[in-house]
Image 1 (cartoon, rainbow, N blue to C red):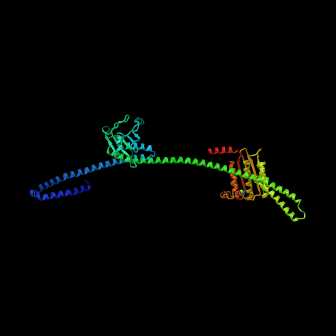
Image 2: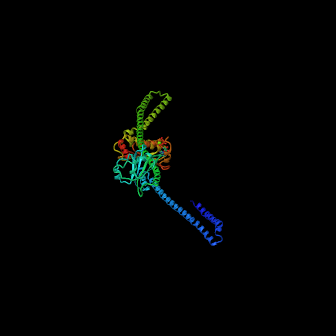
Image 3: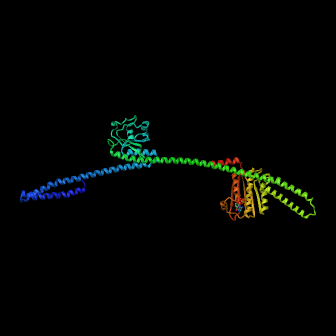
Length: 505
Ligand SMILES: Nc1ncnc2c1ncn2[C@@H]1O[C@H](COP(=O)(O)OP(=O)(O)OP(=O)(O)O)[C@@H](O)[C@H]1O
Ligand SMILES: [Mg+2]
């Protein structure tokens, strides 16, 4: 009975009763007793007492019953709260881990804790319902080992797997579906099992055995375990997703590693091909220069020289009284002489024979003199520790061409009054420094410009790089320019070995 109703009854019932007593007094008692006031009062009090006492009893017993119900319901609520709290804590502990084996173990421990069971197990099943993994709690590792292979699900475990709904057995030994325990299996009295749903289909089952502190598992235990199994399902799905993500990440990392190694290998190959190509182009260029220089020297210059000799012979045959013819002949002779000189110069410029015949230092000195003749600027050439023998042709040609380019740059761009060329030789390397006192330039601007028209410095670097060397340019507007080139004097095989060593460091 609710409080409203009780309140209405406690107000309306006494009033009704009083009214009844009043009517009774008026109609019956007055007639029966007459004017005897004492007797009338006794009867009225008696009637009131007869009504009031049972009514009070009824009211108080109703209130007491309601109080009892309230206390019980409070106790049930607080028990439910405690249980839900336990489930929450268990769920939190399950979800804390992401590693799948750890998540499964946490679920078994939490389930055992929540329903107070001595033993717990979680069987992971495949699509056909076969148990593929069994995680246990409450037995030692030795006991687990002694159990042997995974259960095949013939007995009560199979019932749970097949039915896919909670199973509560108060006494396993009396259940006709039980198949008995395998050898080494601990004896168990009662069982509570619930399925674990993964993506709406059963992915495993939780088995709890031997309730602690009670004869059997209760309906509440079952409800709590069902609730926990829902959290467990989500945690398992999360852990599987995490594991899959990790394996994808691992595969990606491995792929990236292989890809990077491949790219590095290809880059090295391309670099080596490009170096080989540059070497071949430069070699072919030098060869062609040499061939044209020889051609000019041996063929063209010889022919011009023969022409001059023939002109000399013809001169004596010319009629002396023809001044116009004599003047034309003199112009012809001068032209042939100039062409012969230019051809010789061109031949020399293309490939100074001095470089092949005498060597680098002499060739640089010769070029410096040519430079002074062309630009009218003094050049000092100095050689420190010159080698006793000859350097390899590739080193001589490279250093000569670099010196030629650096000097030509000074002549073309620097407006210098003096240039110094210093060659230094050590056992392992050679250094060339070309320094002018000209106007200098902004290196960054030149480096940022397109290569068109600025091939000179690019060529210097290429030639040096082929000899494992470097080019450093030290300059600024108004400060002059110093070009420093260092190249290795090791032969190609030694250079390759050294760079391989560096690459593997
Ligand atoms: N010694 C120098 N003094 C002043 N400026 C220089 C000097 N050397 C180089 N430069 C500047 O650097 C630029 C690039 O030089 P680089 O030798 O690469 O090209 P270039 O001489 O202009 O053309 P080329 O391709 O014929 O050599 C030059 O155009 C010039 O402005
Ligand atoms: Mg240049």
